[in-house]
Amino acid sequence: MGELKKLVEEGKIRYIGLSEANVDSIKRAHAIHPVTAVQMEYSLWTREIEEDVIPLCRELGIGIVAYSPLGHGFFGGKAITESLPAESLMGVHPRFTGENLENNKVLYARFANLAAKHGCTPPQLALAWLLHQGDDVVPIPGTTKIKNLIANIQSVAVKLTPEDLKEIADVIPVSEVSGERELEVLSKYMYRVANTPLK
Image 1 (tube, rainbow, N blue to C red):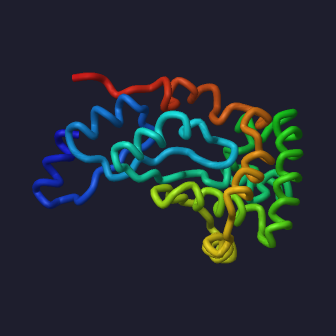
Image 2: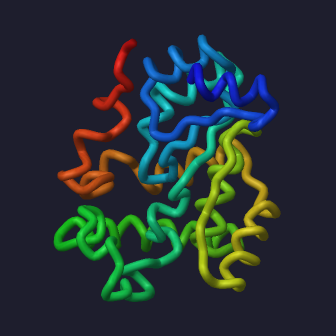
């Protein structure tokens, strides 16, 4: 952070952001130089940052960049309405394999019905839910298809009431999502257990 602060002071960069940082790392980094944004996985089926990272970022005035806002494509129908490409890493992801996938398909069906009720697609509803979590939350969905890009942009037009937001969250209860959010080999690097070293 000290070196990044120098780059800001030299006018070589304007802002500093962190990715997958835990609460302690965010606090220590922000004490050296204001952090502009923290990028974290955040979607309807990955919400643990609501307990610790989001409150801290709001206290410190830091924006939240939500990556994998469609649950690695799950809310776009990956492995549900369309098959996974043979080379896709999702083929070994805990939430996309075996019994976990079968259980998660039930959640997707309920969610798809709710999207139809709102007159939009499941990915649009998932993005709209995130867009309604606060002006400081910015989802960054990835796509390789122009039609998906256009559809994602249209999620901005989906208006949701507080009651709608509760209903959406309730139809995808985190306690019912099957499978860990990461491969076991990566679990020791997840933000809650990994920390940057002290000086």
